[in-house]
Amino acid sequence: MTGNLILSNVTRQFGETTAVDRVSLSIQPGQFVGVIGRSGAGKSTLLRLINRLIDPGSGSVSFDGVEVTALKGKALRAWRRDCAMIFQQFNLVDRLDVLTNVLIGRLAEHGFLSSMAMRFTEEERAMAIQALDRLDLVPQALQRAGTLSGGQQQRVAIAKALVQQPKIMLADEPIASLDPANATRVMDGLKQINTEDGLTVLVNLHTLDTARAYCDRIVAMRAGRVMFDGTAHQLTDDVVRDIYGLDGFAEFNEAVTSTTARATGRVNEPA
Ligand SMILES: Nc1ncnc2c1ncn2[C@@H]1O[C@H](COP(=O)(O)OP(=O)(O)OP(=O)(O)O)[C@@H](O)[C@H]1O
Image (cartoon, rainbow, N blue to C red; front, top):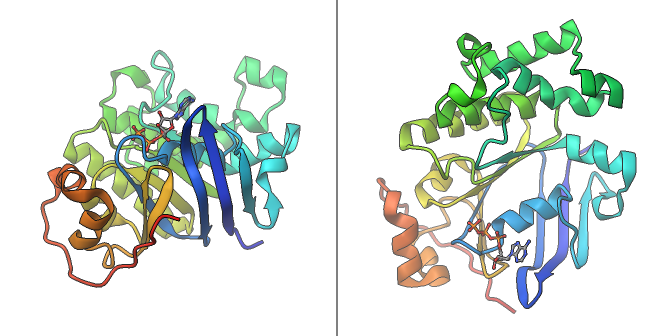
């Protein structure tokens, strides 16, 4: 098993809009990949195509040589468990405690009846506590999720994703609604898991400085197309201006605090 995720010429339209336009990417196991782009660039659609929340109009998504777009029934459910997804709005059950929210990540392993009864084994509880410990959330384990800060809730969502024992972690703008301090803790949590477990992480981001600080590889999208695919070092300010124009550059750079290395980037012209 290699853990290679390969997208070939993936396209998805919504009416007249081509949300994702002939995207080809090959993502090796253990990479920390940031997908950047302005609102509407196709970032969310790309992640949803990978975990099959939506289907492509054409093209192929494969993982370890298995065609993901052809999966059905049990195999599709297994794939959704293998590729955990984290959302901007956390997707926790506010009235349930943190530990139970994390355990919900195990439900894909349960049959219908034990899911309904929310019965979990001691081993699963231990796994959930361990995941919470990695994200510094053990003291909050019995607190209602809705009473936590946004950053803590997002870290609970990461713990919940971890107990799914995924092969790849997808995060759709996980820090878009957080203040900088909480955003840093969430990104640190993702990076720690990536480094310690070798788990592939694919994360949609709005700001350049975050992508440059955390990602081994940055994919920049515009109007559904991949316009750049390279390292943070290669994604110079000049390259960003080429792709997004001056307005886009200013928007991306709102949160930029550090200066950027001046290296030569690779820009793919749209076909
Ligand atoms: N379910 C849908 N129905 C119709 N149009 C859609 C749907 N999902 C996405 N789109 C359109 O596809 C394009 C890409 O949207 P997408 O949400 O993937 O972009 P994004 O880069 O994630 O933007 P944002 O940062 O605002 O979430 C947009 O024009 C959007 O309006």
